[in-house]
Length: 100
Image (cartoon, rainbow, N blue to C red):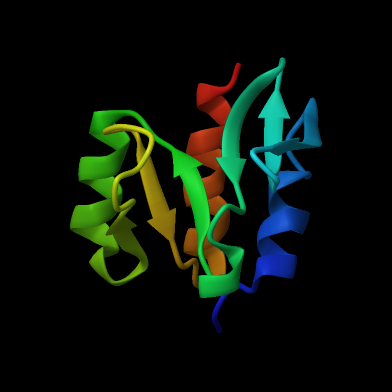
């Protein structure tokens, strides 16, 4: 079952210390004041995650159907993600840990 934008918001806010904010007009999610995810591409059905290069490689290798590069994005660390089932929480969780 696919993860919806509503699911993405809910999951992002389940992490300890996570708060919802706004970045450039889009909802964002922060831990300790650092953004770990945004909904900058929510209209396309994507959430954006801040991932380390190692996390990107792991998730893309394991789940290539849910990751696409951010066109002209915020740098190498950002990826659009179309979550599905439990993998969505795992991906967002990896991103949330980066905010700490």
